[in-house]
Amino acid sequence: ERWVQCDVSAERQASLTRLCSGRAILSKSQIEINYARNNTTETKQNDSENNTPNNNNKSRPPMNIAEIEGIKYRMVWSCLLLVEMVSMNISCAAHFQTLATTAVSKATELLRIFNSRTSQLVLGAGAIHSSAKLKSINAKHLALVTQSLGLVIRILPHVRAALMAQLPPKQHTLLTELDKVKKDFGEHNEMVLSKFVSIIGGIVEHGLVPRIAKTDFDARAKNLPLPPPPPLKQDEATPPPPVQCCAFLDGIVTNIRKMHQILANLLPADHLQDVFVRIFVYIDQKVPSLFIAADAESSQLSLSNPGSVLESSGGGSGSKTNSMSSSQHGGGSMSSSQHGNRYKLSNSQHGGRNLSGSQHGKKLSTSQHGLAALDKITGSRHGVNANAPKFKMPQTDEGKKRMIVEMSALCYNLNQFEGVTVHSFTCIEVLERELGLQRDKKKEQVECNSNGGISADDVTKSNTVDTPTTSLPEEVEKDGKDDEKNTIDEKSKNSDQSSNVKKE
Image 1 (cartoon, rainbow, N blue to C red):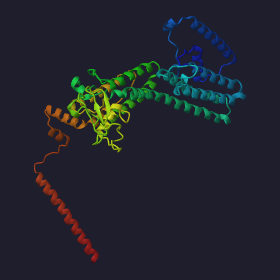
Image 2: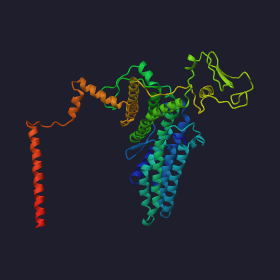
Image 3: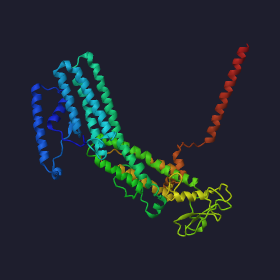
Image 4: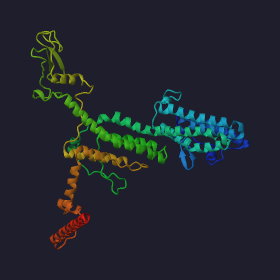
């Protein structure tokens, strides 16, 4: 199986329709007629395919798609062969009652073999090393696999009903194995759908993450104009102005768009929405965490290597030589050339000693600045290049706004894909909390209200409930206090009377 789409003939579509309508069993004469017709049509198709040159492949008519209960499925050849073999087992159980139990076990075994081999060849990438010799397992292969699994899941209740009609009531417990097979197919289909998310995750976490280090939102805010943030909903009347996003965010949109172009032609609407809801949830959670982790990593590296920046020492940017002594006796020095590109380690005047020894045979102590310079020459001790750019969260208000606007543009562009439900992203709120922009947001609301003729005091007053004014509020309060005193006096009198009754 090369996991390519195949054409569904009219006879195979008719057999699927009969199976799903409860008429899967044919008479002996009908089986012979259909068998002869299938052989003649298949030989004609093979002859026509062999005679047509490869240049005319693009001019072929579109392939027929299997349709079950109003849902269309794009099939591979092995899945069609599986459905045909299961139908043969059903007809065998109908025509030979003594073989009904054997037909149930054989049909269950066929379904399990198809499920396990499909998982090994596609999810386990076994098709790369098999006779199919695929170069890679891509999203198109996964889409055809989930379509094939969906068709089998759809027809399994009808297969179960057809086999149950051929079994005596005492042997209906054998059909529980078909229920387990259906559960296995559902779990396999779930793994294939989640594989689309892992493909996007691998691209984001391995191919696009290095672009974060080269992103400086403060510098982008100075060089690029700041458009208003685009709306997150798709049903806006006027589209927002285009926003030039950074390379990291632009790469995310580009790769997800490519996957959408592939899956939109292969998956049905409900499966397409399911896949992209999973992808959007992953992007919503992962992108802010990547920015935060990159900022934390850069700050940690700066703390662990306090002397990694050599340009500030000596008042020059590499044009002067910088030397660091290991001990008072000068066991070893580190000097840079005039151009600041080459470094060499020179021993002391006494010679014969490296950085690990001194003139008198004592162990030399190297300063932190010397270790930082060594890390800069040979690479960091943790495998990170000290000269590589490091990402930092924006510090200026313009840089923070620029970051939020570009994230809003990312969310808006993802919600523009056709056939995909609009997702409510929360990554913008996470970054706003991280950047400390929520308080500024409240201030902006108060300022907007003040510009409209409403002050901040009016805003707070408007939030309180207006109480009706009275002409004599002090007298009312006095009357209330007098009523409380009267009630207290009455309670004390009643208590005194009760005590006197007890005494008598």
